[in-house]
Length: 45
Image (cartoon, one colour):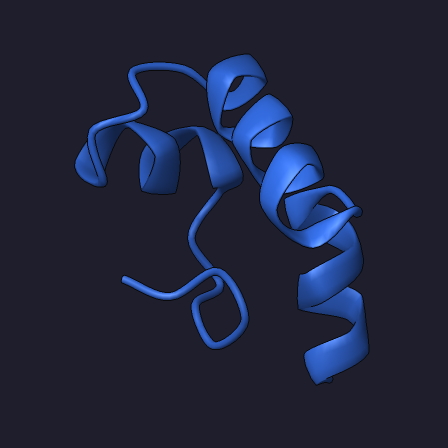
């Protein structure tokens, strides 16, 4: 499930992709992409 194309809540995406919780996913996105998952989602629309 991709953050950019899915309408699923970020908490659900985090759980399904192995992050466990949205906070952990957000920190990983910040380290890797320099922005939170919400920003990538907004930019893709």
